[in-house]
Length: 412
Image (cartoon, rainbow, N blue to C red; front, top):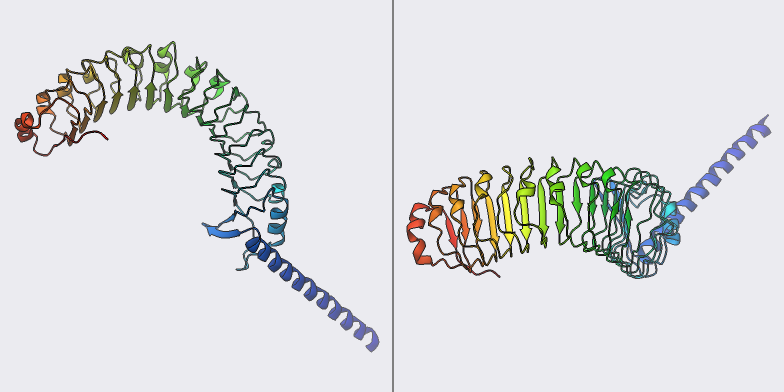
């Protein structure tokens, strides 16, 4: 009886001894992994709002196999917190070529790999169930993104300035809302048919894109930037974008501007280089527009048609604009900016805008008389650098508007 009891006690001590050995081994293994991460791979661990950020900058990192394995081994931080990295930041890594191995880190919410000059592909990125943000911008060697798939939680994908990227061929992103492809100079085609939940689409500087397939299916889109897409000749499906708030289409030719006038929630419109635009009449029906910017439209001769809801109007280098007749259709205008409009001379219509607070005529050299502003009691600032207005000529106006600053400093 005593012998049996002694065996049980001995067995129990053995189990405890084994557990202690295993525990000490795990502690030592974690410590060794942390030491390697910090000393060899220059890994930094930070805690922001209960989210663990892992930043790795070592030139030894060419893929993520070893790095991810070490992070797995170091499953507890020095503080005893469980290591479940939310953000992996590889920004500026000089030798990173691929993402192989990152799938070990199943808890990742965000991956940031900006300005990694040797990053050629994103192989290994698929299959991360919680990844909501993938920021891989300004990677000059990146040309293959076909591995971006089966990421059910991905909301934001930033591929800005991937100058060698020829095509956007990604699937399995049901949650994608924000797609940034600005400065992808070599991108030749874009099909967003399977990305119907997009809210933001930035393509500025994609100079070889000729069409956006599936644009009309982006019924939740709020922001669209196609500026400097020089080969883009139409925006087929634009009228379906009933939620669109911001449209930037500088330096693309659009044969029919009337389609823009059918966007019920458009708040901000930016135009430039449209030779076919002679007035703002195509936009007169916009019921939500607050800001409109027009630059280098050589045939713009009138601002008539400015929507009644407009609060800001900017017109730059439109040399055939000579008067502002019709501007008072937007009685709530608060900020008006005319810059380098060499033909602009008659600005008397501004006297009817009682809500005007800021006004600029920088480098509009034919403007010499602004006495009509005497009724604009809310004016806080008038910029007159580079105009024909002489400071001594506005002394009577200054007496009528004592709280207004008249700035004659030359434009930079």
